Structures are given as C-alpha cells and as structure tokens.
Image 1 (spheres, rainbow, N blue to C red):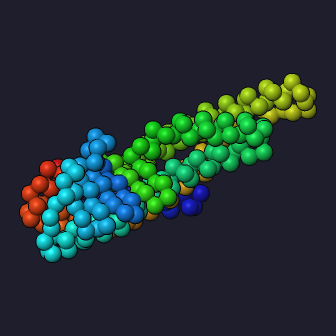
Image 2: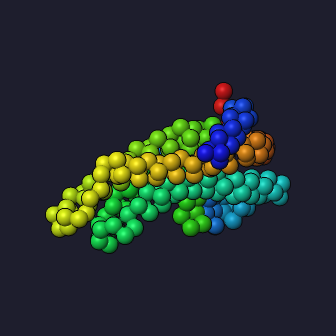
Image 3: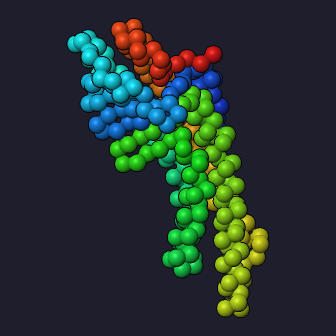
Length: 253
C-alpha cells in the first residue's frame, strides 16, 4: 500500500513537467542496425544508411562534409532516443501480459496454455502497432510525449485490467466446468476466482504505475533531447530543402 501511495505521489509531482512539453514525432521512425527509416502511411520516404548516407524518396542525396556531420548527429540522436521510448512502452505491455500468462502456468494441457497465450497476444496486437521492438529493430509511430504518457496510464491500464478480468475469468470458468465433470472434489467459488483475478489486476497496475513514473522522471530529459533533435533537423532542412517535407520532430500547438 505504501508503494502504491508513493507511486501516486510521484506521478502527480511530475505531471506538470510532462504537460509543459509539446514535442512530438510527426512521422513514424524505424531504427535498425544498418539504417533509419522515416515512414508516412507505412511507406519509407527518408532513409539514412550507416548514419552518413541519405536517401529521399529513393534518391541518393549528395552531402557535403558539414551535411554528413549534421546527419550523423541527427541519426545518433534518434538511435539513442527512440529505442528508449519504445522500450518503456513495450516493457509496460509485456509486464501486464506476462502477469496474465503466469496465471495459465500449470493449468490445463500445454495445447490449452498455448491457445490461451495466443488469444492474449492477438487481443493486444493492436495496442502495439504504435510501439514495436524486435531484436535490434525499434519502431515508434507518430505521437507526442504526452500521448505516450496517456497510453501507459490512461489507455493501457484499463485495457489490460479488462483483459485480465475477462480472459482469465473465462479460462477459469472453462477449466472449472471441465474439472467438475471429471473430479467431484474440485471446487472453487466465484469469490475465490475473482479475488485471484483482482490480485492479478493490482499487480499489473502496480507495474504500469512504475513504468509511468519512469517515463515521468525522464520526461524533462526526453523533451530536451527532442528539442535538440529538432534544432539539428532544422539545420539539415536549411541545407537540404528536400527534407522540409518530412519534418519528423515538431512542436505541437
């Protein structure tokens, strides 16, 4: 209980700092070991290879030494920032899913467990279209820092809570019915069932609160990094006008 209170206080104390930042990504950004891609409507419009080669709409852009230096700074800034943002969001989702999936351990056959886990993953797939982490590849959809904060605390938490109550409750119900036909000693009251799910929901909420606190604690630093990226991007756009059509880091009104 004390930890919950502390997390709530921390969230409140950082809320003003998060609200002051109006920086956002206007385009999707995909970070890979060999390249960075700027996407619009799932199509690559800008690509940076090896942090020093620039392609706009598939055309290789000739760069001066100063252009290359700016591009390297810009690329390195994205490489340091985007994976960290994506990881906070993905870790929050994975935390909730792993807690739900842990309920399945030792219940039913391996085939049933695999089926339940797949159901959970399919249900949450749409949530993660905005954040993707696969090995060394990271994707961040267009959004602001404030929207990321809302995703963790205002959107993800109730969705995971609902998933926990309905999915786990359904699994227990199906398993209970099956066992009653085969073992008359198996009994589990509704109160016991929902108390168990309630504890699971509390665990998920506590973990998500911790991730929200982590984001809030870094919000000022993240905002500063985005402002720095925006300045570098503006310098590149002044030197390379073709980039002006793809203003990735922006200030929202």
